[in-house]
Length: 160
Image (cartoon, rainbow, N blue to C red; front, side, top):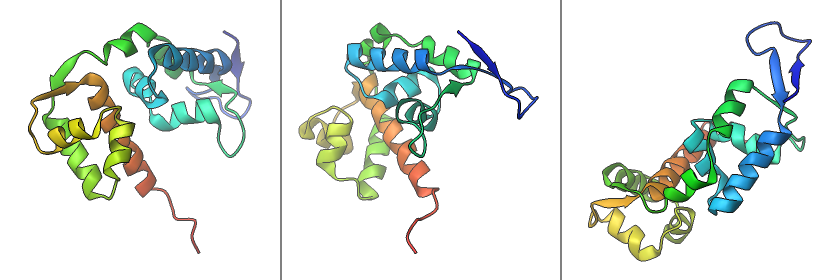
């Protein structure tokens, strides 16, 4: 890992590491576990915007460096842990509330089911409160959808 010292700041964020190995790690983990990138962000406890910037860049420019703390958090997530989210069952109460809120905000039901990697029938069961559990993956994706929605609501509009 090559540390880069920023000439612009001399504070706690002055030492950075090359982003490329961590971008490769996230891509590998998502590919092997067959989960979308927000799952890695949530499992690592890293903001969705950081992982999105790591993978796709910002304003057309790739992210070239990352804070060591965030890099270490991403590195702790492995594909086996992500795969296990598909079978681990958790109480569905909070997920049900999140899904209802997303639907009330106009998220199309079929798109929400696809995002959460569940079928429309399972989405209906969750939203209707007819199931007591869901997978940790469904819970994680519903939370990620909620956070992405909230982040989009706080962005200034580009319309004139």
